[in-house]
Amino acid sequence: RKQSASARLIAALIRSKDMPRVLVRPEVVGALVEQGVVLGLLVAMSNTEHPESCKHAIDALAVLLRASPPAAAHLSRLAGSAWMQNFKADPAGSAYGLDRAVLVRLLSGTGNVEQLRFHER
Image 1 (tube, helix red, strand yellow):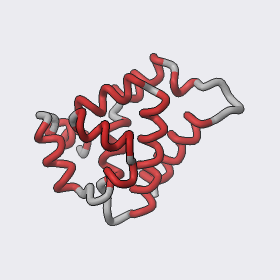
Image 2 (cartoon, one colour; image 1 turned 120 degrees about the vertical axis):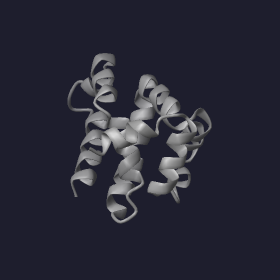
Image 3 (cartoon, helix red, strand yellow; image 1 turned 180 degrees about the horizontal axis):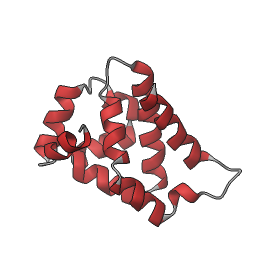
């Protein structure tokens, strides 16, 4: 529930037309990336026991990548540019089958699996 709510909030803040688009300002995106939001959304996407969390995390990450080149660059470093490009082209299709084991392999391929272990503490 927390993952799903967090993902919905991120997407809503980015999409909001009623307030200044604070979330896409470089310093705000930088802080989000630094705090692990991109990795957190990947973790939520891989949480196959909670499909609602996966769905909202996919949406939030797709919205964040469209709104923020720095977030896209960070995802590229985390998961690899090929996966990131596939995700941008087809978010739901790319995320299909992304469970924890696949996420570990994905992050291992780019040398970032330790970030996952740190994130899960």
